[in-house]
Length: 265
Image 1 (cartoon, rainbow, N blue to C red):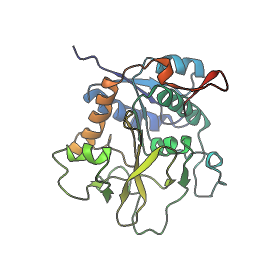
Image 2 (cartoon, rainbow, N blue to C red):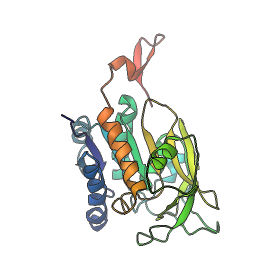
Image 3 (tube, helix red, strand yellow):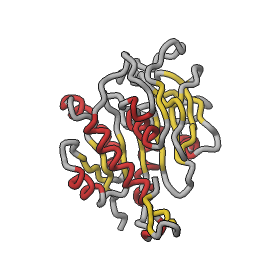
């Protein structure tokens, strides 16, 4: 019998209940339709409570958010165009990412979730996109905002090429963001850019033994209509199905000089 993996999905924001009510169910529905069990992570819960819940999950999905990450986390002063940060969301994301990387659990980051992943891996963000000739903020009603250029030898390309709908060299995606990855974080590789302005639209983990993918668009919004969007969720949930807890020595770095082990980040 094929067991359904539990997927941890934090609430998008701690300050906008209407956004949560509108957004979180879309991620949950896509996970459920792909064979997973969505698990809501409440941002108001204690870190101990969150850690207990996520320990039973085989995958981490970081959703979008109306907030922007605190730019001090990547060594920049906040620009006036940046939205206020959400410390509660950032704290939960940090805990989930630590768990996922320590135990090699699959990770899917979407929009803000991609940016959260990148900054946690010591990458930086472009705080505001302007004057590129591409509108990155047309909103949720526009399903095809701009084309993508995807690196051919990437996990993302393999996922999209497995979708019967992706027959064009430059698939089109939706877009609802004003920030983007500036420099990719440690162990992350840029695998897609918007065309023609070259804004980074996707990164993935360089390690072959862990599914790590972040996309700047919103595949949950087009899950029903676009096979390419379904393919992303299905690949992620399949990776969670395949995930197995490793022996502790495989999830930590041993330093003989220290006589102890340190968690991998």
